[in-house]
Image (tube, rainbow, N blue to C red):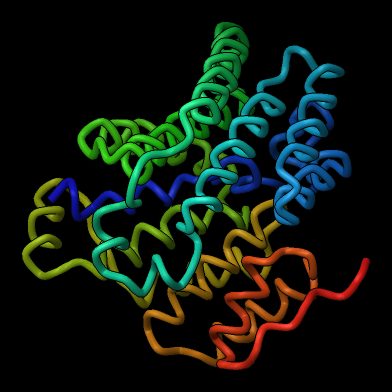
Length: 293
């Protein structure tokens, strides 16, 4: 069961970064607000300019040394790069049940994972320092959710240590629920339950029955509806919601939806080879070079 439920960990990849973002939040809560500098950093990440994205996040962190957002974002850039290089967010991965249920082939890059864990450790330290003065601090909930969620991705998808990944997933889900309770109208928050519902709903009847006893339920249709809300109205994670929803749509043979989402991603990020390749695959047409920017 642990092996078959590994992909639940993808639920929490980057979720808190924008999962609870609201334009009404004040400047003291950048994890919940659309900040131009941070938006630019995430644009670099989606353009596959991972080193530049990390530099942007690190520069922001240097000017905001008490906030865990920058360190969490740096960690996210390392993890997203490894997931990209391992082909996780592709139709080759999603449409291959062996990969979809068991994880990557081979091993992740050890140096990249070391830097990823260092950034997570620093983010946790900053978050827990703030937690002493305000346990309900949204930045604290954000950082701790993010740290546990991304660690669960690493453990389960990349390292294939599914028991450890499941433990981190449960920890992250608890923090995410608390944060979502404070921000019920945040569109990107739908990414977490959306992926969980879709992946659990995709499992065999026997696996779903076992998960049900553990208090974990899923519904594919509901999951895709929740992902669609994030893909339509999300902030930092809107592109992430779109690629996940597009790949789920391909699994469900909903090609028009997949083509629409992938076309939008390709138009927004013309230099992203992954988006262009997936759009070509979904459209069954030759891949064309991205236009010069």
